[in-house]
Image (cartoon, rainbow, N blue to C red; front, side, top):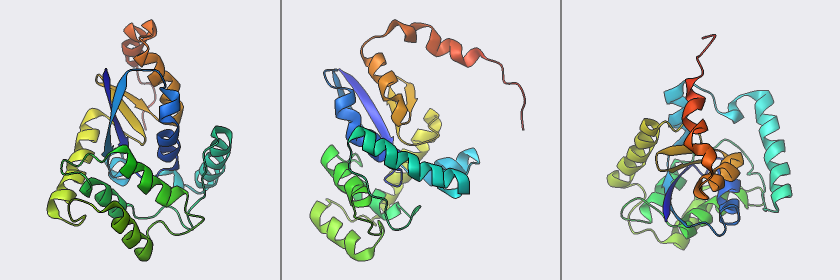
Length: 211
């Protein structure tokens, strides 16, 4: 059985869609998933990038695309009233639900749906966050120093692994990024021989122009 580590941030609609479709995409494969909430903004800062929602044209396209993809996938999705938002409270809440900082699928599903099935409500609304906290009944206080440290540790570990975006799935040291990587991840789990050579050889391409 393979262990897949799923790096996610609830701020990402692509992470939500990948989370919802993962069981169907990997149906019949032998695997288990470990969920690791991380701070997407910290990845962007590390790599010197802006997020999709911070670039005007890309922002509009991202929202149109995820609404289209949700429709094609049959996954309910409603945009929150504002985006991007500060996801720290949601990330810490999810981590606080497990003493080792590895929330189970139910916790992640509940938080994702709080954001993306909200009928347009604000994801970071104080009253809604309070109700969500009551529903999940975390084992630890979300604002505890240990929880904050775990979020940083998860994020730092992701950066060290080469993670640059969410969702990212890591298995056997191989990193698969994005919703559209799910078929590729499935092929790897199924033992596709392509990975024996092409995976490594793809990195041999020399970098041309640098900016």
